[in-house]
Length: 577
Image (cartoon, rainbow, N blue to C red; front, side, top):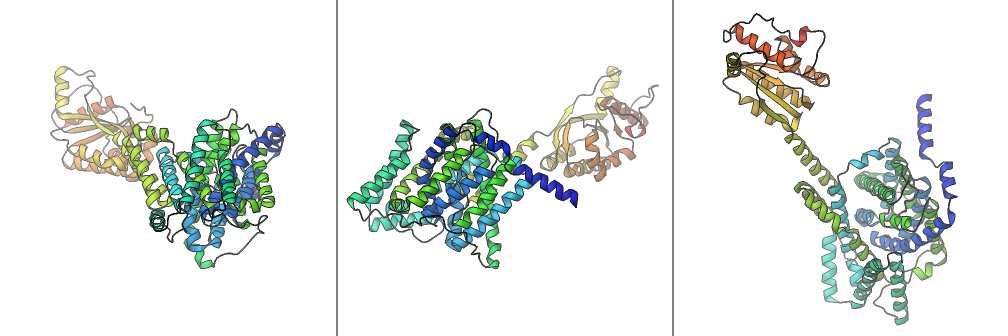
């Protein structure tokens, strides 16, 4: 017990911040402070927009950016990661807010945070790299579409219709706009989106999103446009921690959404941290510690009225480009946003909702990497299929099902590709010391097959069908030295094939069985079947000699003075050939 507690304590110590983090923050504080200020300017409209889009209001987005941004910066595994509310997380949260309200978000955030901390303790960070790239690209495309469609009601200046399916809500919003058009809101949304998209191509370092939102707010106030509905009153400060839980009976129905939130937070955060590493020299994140930091952030943020958060790729990229070198920049970003919450809440409350809708429309468009999609679609048909299925499932169903569908299809196609590598090829018999006449007799009665690749459940049935077609021979030699792997299904099929051929008076001999294959063959009984009849040999030439000896006993070959080979079961030393 003491040993277990000691190991747990040591593991926890590895996940906690250390002196190295503090020393790195002292290296170039001026650059980090400037980078943090720049990121905060970029993050402000995004935090407000994602908070509104989630259904909990702009204050929820700001609280998330402040609380989660600070805690993930301190406890996370990347020096350059910037965390906060993201569009992908908003997609998952909208139906939760609609059904359970703020208390549902609190419960989901707490459960997801604890799951992330558990994953960190289990050192699961390294396994996130096995998610196929087409799945990531597919749900990124789907999320971008969902984020864009979610902004349609605010961009059209109509109240958000009832419903939890984004396509249905969008259609109802368009119908409502057709009855009572609000061209002012449309103009604000399109103008802000256009300024962001054009400005990003012209001067990427200038925060055009904030400039566009400020300009829209000024115009709305000076012109006194009633059609430009503002955000509304914001609290001047973060709310006190809340522990208003749901009824315990409702927690079970939130387990699946919590798993989705945890999986998304892990995947998006580790992907963002990897992007940051690739943009720098000498930076490398700790995936397990990153999971721990995101877990702590997601436990705390909902307590202060926020929503679950992840590492944000766009804000992290801005952080790196502006010269950040330590966690101080992310902490500065959170501190600046906190100052805005406390000092400028009345000003922020006047921002038109349509302007924030334009910010998120532009963000959704910029999420779509056309070059990456084109490359992925041209790579293979399987990659294109996975990408399209994941994107469509994200749009039509939800992110949980989309990821599951993408992973299942990717796994099935990968198994299919691996199964195709398994081959059963007939190979010519070695001449050895036999004369041409003897070799002709051997070839007439013996056939040798070389088994290449994996012999597992996905390829075993085809193996059985091909082997069952063997006819008009007396001995079959299976050369097993090139079998890369074999599972229980493959061993069962091999045993079944041997028994079927034996019932047809065809003797089966095997050569070159590797030591790592013996356990599964022995557990199924396939190896015992060969051993009992002395039909397993270390090398193929020895198997051919054994086959010739069998033919001699059957009177089909003239006897030779040479000594008959001993099977592997009688030898003390084996060499696989």
